[in-house]
Structure formats: C-alpha cells, structure tokens
Image (cartoon, rainbow, N blue to C red; front, side, top):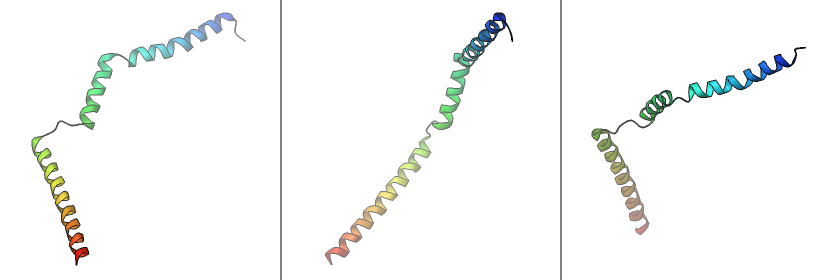
Length: 78
C-alpha cells in the first residue's frame, strides 16, 4: 500500500477536481450565455400578429361555449 504521501495526493485530487470544475462551469459569461439562450427558446419575444391571432382564437372559443350554453338553456325552457 501507499504511504501517507500517496494519501495526501489522493485527497488533494479529490478536493481539487470538483472545486476546479465548479469554478470553471460557474463563470458568469458561460452561465449568462446559456441562460439567455434558454430563456429565448422557452419564452420567445412576442409579436403583434401572434398575439392578435391568439386573442382571436380565445374569443372564438368563448363564443362557441356561450352559444352552446345558450342552446342548452333554450332546450331546458321548452
């Protein structure tokens, strides 16, 4: 088996490796690039035409539901 010098070297490696990886991967410039890219993928900037199309779709669904509800109410009254 190795002596105390080998154990000290091994312990230094065990501590240095994760600390160095933590230091390298937590640099703000790398993290900021990744966060901005991911945020743009998940939440793309809104465009006016997409927003209007979305609102029109919501209105049409609401109108359909309202018409269905009114038709059900008319059939119950009869």
